[in-house]
Image 1 (spheres, one colour):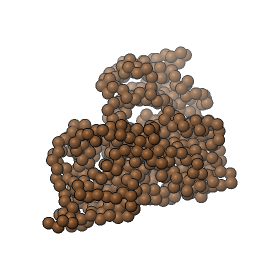
Image 2 (cartoon, helix red, strand yellow):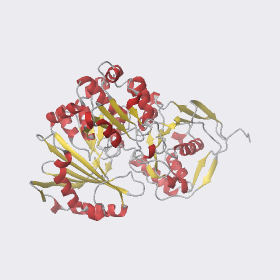
Image 3 (cartoon, one colour):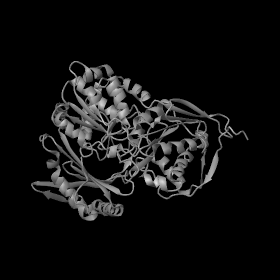
Image 4 (tube, helix red, strand yellow):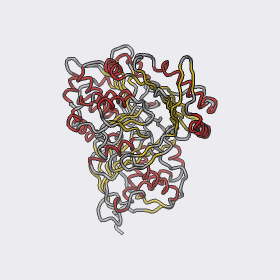
Length: 564
């Protein structure tokens, strides 16, 4: 045998029962991947085995991550296993890092069969933190449930995996690396690419960069503050916002990606991005933004920390969508929001006579509508907004959309949002997160709650708090039939809808690793009283939500971990 050929091995293994991918892939504590024999290998083999061998042979696969701890270790294993499983080419971000939106872009650009994204999004990183693996398919979006179910079923019965242990890739050098494997006619190619350029070029074709540069660095420029929270998006902030659009480097903080995100929680909300909120209070900056670990989420702030709720953010972009040149050329096919997101977007859709879709949580549902040519703009209440340029939510795209609106309207963030509320009324919205709840207690509470609300006697019940009375009009466990392929997604969240349109929604988050996060969403519309404090306006409904669920008693928690 030619000693220069790299050997491919088939290694026996035993399955694990807990490798079911959630909405955002497989997420576990780092120590699970490190301490359980072949835990990583089993899941990666299950991904490759879910792809038909004929499609896999000679195919292209993209790999990148948010730079968190264990990222590089995982990439080496993935490359070795890809080669052994017949993949012809791997495209990897420089140093193994690439934002989730950029990976979606690169999958589509290179017509890859899919991509493996190494991120736990807004969850903490480091040796004691979380690690995640998500598989995106050829459209650049998260795998559909049929695919993730297949991966899970394979993981439950796996007996062996294929690997080329002698294959070692240099992630630090841009360009192609070629490897000859035994029993392979063609070399296996690894291409290390600039993590930013393909994505930056896509954005140049969507937005008016000249107008944005004038807004950020012209004679009458605005001052902005950017917090990348030590996630991978720091690379994109520096290259695109600072170097290309002229934002001062000093306005961008925490832009060096760190394996533990500086010991912080890379979640762009008012709790975890407190440093940004504090820096905005004195009025020095006109516009503020924070991003999460992998760059797909964003939080928008105006002068003095004026907060833009995510459901309002997507509604404002929808109402001003032709400030973005891309949509002047493509037109607008449809709007969509996740079910827990407030109905602010619905009001814009109704006024503009554009189709509105209400989907379960998860970007894959939006992607299906986009692939069918039915959707242009969508958003989730969890700080995710995006367009049909890729198949992931996109934090930097959302920021450039807002800046395009500011450049066109020449108003402040606060004035734009208040004008929007005057025009459409305001959907007051809040979300209470009860993190790290005992998973058994959380599941039992949700089961009992569902039994209660789906009972016919629950409809028409009245709840009184202070001088407000709310009557139940509808209650169910949300079910979605995809208008494209008629697939049905059940058990997507418990809904209580009142006669005035107010809603209370309960969900268990699928992104926790060992414990559950219980989420309560509250949405209430006001036509006249648009400038009140959201928590004050929603307090009666919050009281009802806690009374119905008995959440504090059932979980032993006295209050939420995070309020947004």
